[in-house]
Image (cartoon, rainbow, N blue to C red):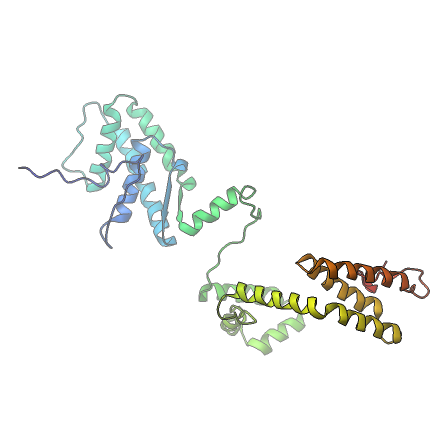
Length: 320
């Protein structure tokens, strides 16, 4: 029984379906991706801008970009040299040239495109490589958000991701030193505080460090703790809120000159309304509104201005 032929990751991988290719380090993943990109352009007749290639690092994207550009240029050269009846394989070809020759043979064999048309199309694809979407994962996400900012509810000028490494800190230190040295006082501050540009770059590590989150995150379920605290406040206010308010109003009537009545009554009214909206008893709420009306009637006018200080919700500095 003969063994099944080994599948070729480049020639046999379906480009219009979801495929998984497992490969270890150093097995030629970048080579395979560049060849698959070239196959999509040559055989599938896709434009460069229609293909998305995503990898992990910026260095890998740059390498893949250059390899694809080289493949397309080599394919255009082969198409220009192609003659009717040329074989699909030539012994003197390198591995890359042999692969491109097989792809070109597949295209020309079906008769839908002439060698001249193929050459023109491949030359155009090589020129369009600056439009290729060969990027990192985060770079692709940024590109999508930038191109569809309105649909994604994002700012039109999205912030760029800048790594916090020594090179970036050094560049920032140079820019700060150059931008602030034209002022004598600021130049003196930089020299006294940091000495030179290298000292400023070293200090930026601590100056740009993430600030700690204060206060510290509570232990356990923070939402449950918040809800319990709010429930306890509601219960306490329902039990003694009316009595305390009466005592407070009485103190204000006795010594109005000492206590800023408009300010304190307004603040307590806002809290009271909030508690009422969140579940305080209707009986206490009705009593509160009755007290509010009496307090409005007793409110004196502001001296000299003729403007009236509202008892609830409006503070003296809000009056115009």
